[in-house]
Image (tube, rainbow, N blue to C red; front, side, top):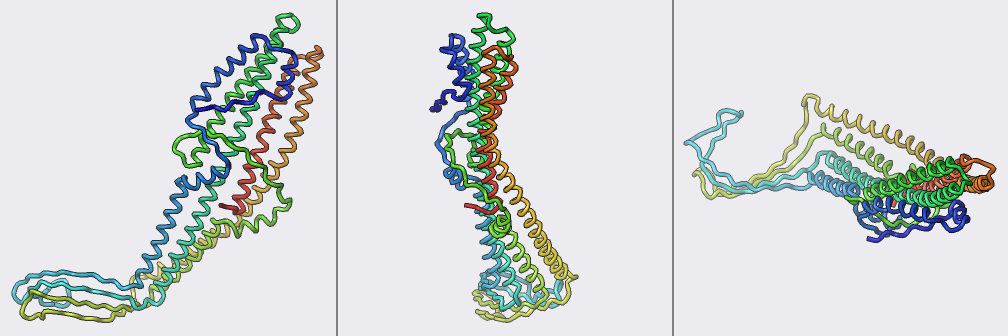
Length: 453
């Protein structure tokens, strides 16, 4: 296992610390102590390190994630339903072997209106049947099943899109956590230098113990920030590992992705595009068509069915009244007359369910329009935050430089310097987060408008 080396502290705080000259022994001990304390915490969770780009992460998730496998298996199962329903159009055959023994001149006297005579025999034969027509019911059922199978293929696309957006979220969240961790590391290094400097000045009676106390407080806050940042890295890697379909957390070396282009200032076209591209809406539309066809099939229950039946066989052992061979064929027409309003209730139920799916389509369309609008607003806001946080960092850096100069000249207290340091750290964290938050929101927007892999 190899842990990548971290960059040396940079930025105004780091440069300002080196301006005092070479740090003393206390400075070296402080940095070594911080690293020894925090390094085992990081090493305890590193099981493996793999280089990973966003595209590679998405490909891994689409191959590994159980949800993708579930949707694909459901699609294959839905295709089999089409074959099951279509089988009613094909002939069926079954073979029979029958042996019977009976008392002389025995007849069935109870349990039926007729009383056929039973002969001693041992026979074998084949019986076949073929549906001639059921006046459209099987055709409608087959088409309904086919539409549902097509809808399941759209569900596969929707699942893939959902998995990809979750991977993107986790990937950029991990990059954001790493960026915040780097800021925290630089802050700890810079504030450790400040503590060493103030400590040396306090020993020379040039600064008070109060100044040293404030400097130590700032250093402790920076260490707490670093601990939280490293914990956030582990948490985001756990989320990323789960999004990739791994059963256990992995640690990755992530590659930064270029920023996407600026958004179109007019989002009106995005909503219309989403209504035609979203796979979940396409699936629901196919479900509505399938429900309509099923309702038509349920109406066909009240129509007659016409079927042919044939049977042939051989009787090697039998009573003298029976011939050695037999064969018969016929046609049967079933006409429904009354069954307690069962067919009427099934037809009504199917119609109502088809109407319910239509209302679901309207509801989903409204939610898609809203979600696209919200996603566009979030992405636009995140893009604006990038520019504002850059300005904030620039101003916070200038403010810290002035506060440091005033403190060095004895014109201000340690409180002013501490506040300027806090503002600088907050600005750096906001700037580190803004880039990746924008990339997350762009990924969410692509998901909402139906851009899927």
